Length: 188
Image (tube, rainbow, N blue to C red; front, side, top):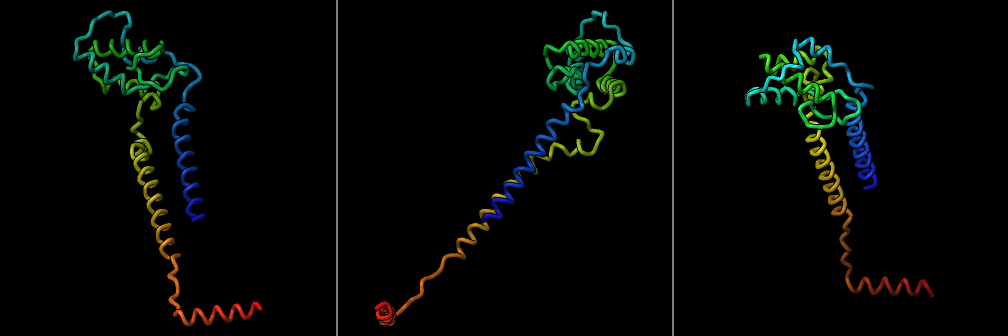
């Protein structure tokens, strides 16, 4: 039982370390300051002064494109460009995306321009690398592994408990009395 507890303790520590690694690695890769918007404005060929209003369909395209990209502002929490927040970089990039949609660009070309300009770290989910393609399965594997460990430890504990139960020996009354008398005589 002691080994099972030690093993489950190691598994819990490994899971905690994995969660800390994967949650902190996104913050560790963030820049010290927000990148300039000039390169993306040039790449998309938009003018921020265009006050053109968007139709509902265009707003939807801008929303989808913005939700696929994260804000590169180091002062903000990890959030997509589309999320409303205090970040000026994200606000400006929402306007850039809306101007690109008004110009006639589609979601894929906008996202591709951002990736080409800022690199894959701008993607909310980087699907170009293998570890990100399978990242969604990690929590499920952790839960399944934890349940498997708990089940295995419970099975082993129950099996040991069943093995440790010793059936009492059946002793005839006459034999027990004789044995008791011998032991009492030996004490005298």
